[in-house]
Length: 494
Image (cartoon, rainbow, N blue to C red; front, side, top):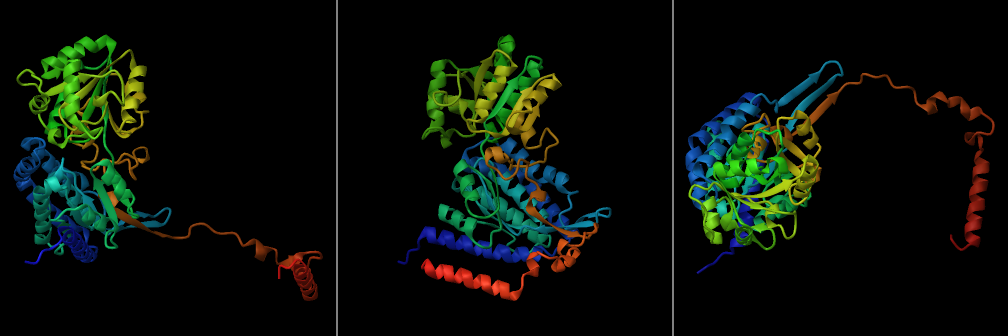
């Protein structure tokens, strides 16, 4: 019986997908804005119709999150995204500056490689498909192996919807035999022009090391500061709403709560009233031991799980209806495990003297795996919000759940599942990624300023000036050359 090497099959499949998608993209590049909008409208319609089914598939396959929240994410990635990007000009002349006489023309990037995480597989696939097509790009997806089926289905639905509305066949592809070698092949093959990487730190670093343009996003370790003027009940509600949304699988979700001593008791009581459970030091240690493997890597079995599941895994008993587990921490970094990113229903808790100490703790947390990403602050003092705007992040989310604020559900930020962390976080952009990040801009620039004559032309009379270099005769030049050659011969250098 003939056998085949799975890894080789995977690499060959990746090559075929890239070649087919690249060919399709060269055709899509000729489409006008009306044709592109017709395609996207059909993709959005199909995504909306399948939002629940895809959410169910994702939860069943990965075990992460909640169906109702993944449904909302699928709708954000399609319907809400379309509302935001519809006015964007991504085809042909996008700006004509009559004053400065510069015409800007949009050109597609080409073929994209979309790396998809297991935490948000279907929503990320829908989102990247739509922003790729909006900019007239093709895209090939590399799915996470643990979310293969639902990612494949989302990619197929987006492809078929695009083709049904007039897009070339194979414009959207997805690897069905995911391996690291297949992903590496796509990262480095000539057909791929840009990488959009959403995933773990190692994958994002690999994308930036592939030798071609990449938009990668790092992890978030979002601090949430409740300042003394905050509406405490609202702040606590926002934090719990965010942390329980899809059981904390979005990287913009809060990871630690920082409160001032003067309001600590009120905050703790409010968290308890709204369904949080404060663990004892012993319980916190048990949970921390289960949450992490190989140092500070999240245990996949507890990613996106309910508080009940996390508690049961650690062997601790919690009150019925508990939404989130909270563990107090006295520091950040080694020895304080809850100070690291936790994509599940667990929060760290810090008490500080004042806002200056809150600043210090926030910066330490951000430098512990979330620099450049996001920070949440709850305050009724606009000046305090601006003080925290000085922190090393690119999303300062005020009086809103940080998950919802970061991805554009509760704020006017661009709806997105690729949240740039800027140079601080090792990312090429600090923005929520949109189709405008996926185009090249060509410029036609007319001359509008007169240039002065060159110095050489203006000084043509210097040739006749005595003592100038150009007044040296040919005989003098030959004499100098002979002297140099004679000197070199004497030194043995010629």
